[in-house]
Amino acid sequence: MESKNLQFKTNLNCGGCVSKVKSDLDNAEGICEWNVDITNSDKILTVKADGITEDEVVAIIKRKGFKAEPLSS
Image (cartoon, rainbow, N blue to C red):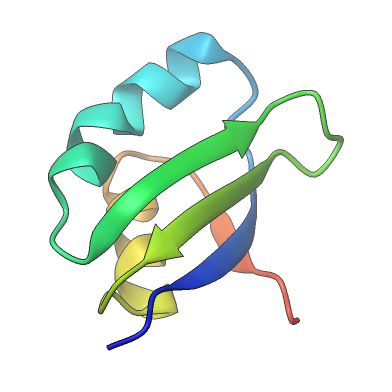
């Protein structure tokens, strides 16, 4: 399967927020790499996905108490 970039608008506002989801995203099957642009007003989470779905990424973020909404490409 070809890897693709998924993007999400989140409410991960700072490094502390990002650190709370880091372990789950690092260990999620189907995520090659990820990062959050906390300088962007929409706090864009970009995930290089290799088999994980948008819904699965949203579920990971929500389990940690944050919001994530897929950006349409």
